[in-house]
Image (cartoon, rainbow over all chains, first blue to last red; front, side, top):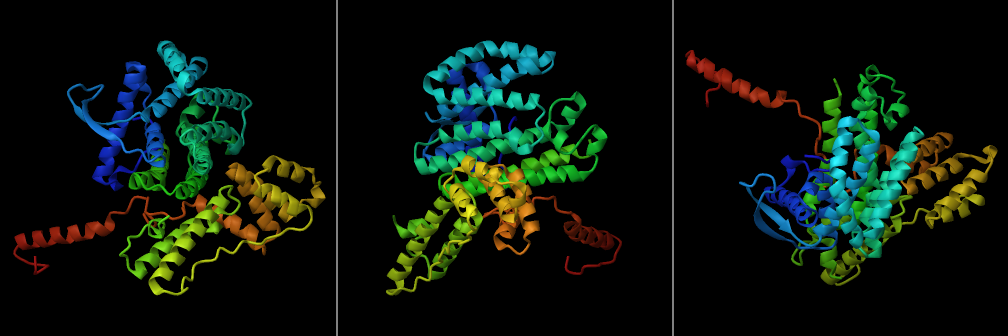
Length: 288
Length: 205
């Protein structure tokens, strides 16, 4: 459903696809167990990638059990069960909390109402997370403030505006391991993953932001004043080049990690998945 | 560590299989892929590890030193004077200091190397767009300099979607035109229709 970092399914082996799905279900179940039913609405494919990376870097061999789906009680699903999922679900909940707070201030009336409804249970979860992972909360808080500041100042340089997200993701990925060498590699990997996610999100929201007159870094970079300015492919092609450069840096870091566990699944996401998302968004924008 | 495990091959692999695994790993960790990257020393370590593993295996198999492993020649690019110290700072990761020193130089001193080093500072920070701008200016100011050209070309090919050690190398992400596949189907339909009418275009189906 939600999320930009996904594998290219047609190129996945069945065994890898099944594992990927069971990891998604595992995260959902872990959220429900630790944080309650409402937190499962924050679930996002990007965090499945984080969980996968965590497991592969730390060589975690997980159990898979059969359980009924949280939403569709009739369906029985394969579900990954492991304590390491707590790390990902905690970050999910925390980042959702900050996003909701952001929505309370920024968006329209409908989003604000939803935000208020979600924020009460979120506060309870946040307290629970902070007892276990304190550094993450600080990283997220700093990032949210810095991001808001730059957007209010209508920052036009791509590198500068994507930096808060990049640094925040870098810190989160750094929490994956205590091994110093791997930590350095993961932090740089996280930096470019965060940068990519920010930019692809901006790309995805480009047409909406023009219509609603919201902030978007690409509007300033390409001097876009109205919908007609994005009729040609040139701008979309250029954005794709910027995004590709990010993936290349992610690849350089991933190669150094020399991951063996879940290698085929991660290879698919990194070498095919990112580009596929870019292609999908580009195809759906052109001609709108 | 077991040299066979490092190269990712079994103990019973043939010499050709080992050579092929060695070549692909060297390509993956090649220093040219990590020029100016803060992880370049880790890549150099991996290269050394792979070289040693390959040499060990070859010595064991052939009984003498016929390793012929790749020597990662350090790119000895040296700028004069100020630039040597700035390069050192960049290599040690002291990017703010290096940036400060670069900014202190007035505009008459800002030559091709200045722009290249500014680009390197930005590249190490992760500011890819700014890095590309400065590498482009450096390469334009000094078109015959290999170092600047290599750095710029690497960025341009990465932007084009070329990734290092891509296991799906050559995979065409873009939708294939269906015209080529359709022609076989068209011929088959034509043959069937023809046979219904009493003729036969393709005699074997």
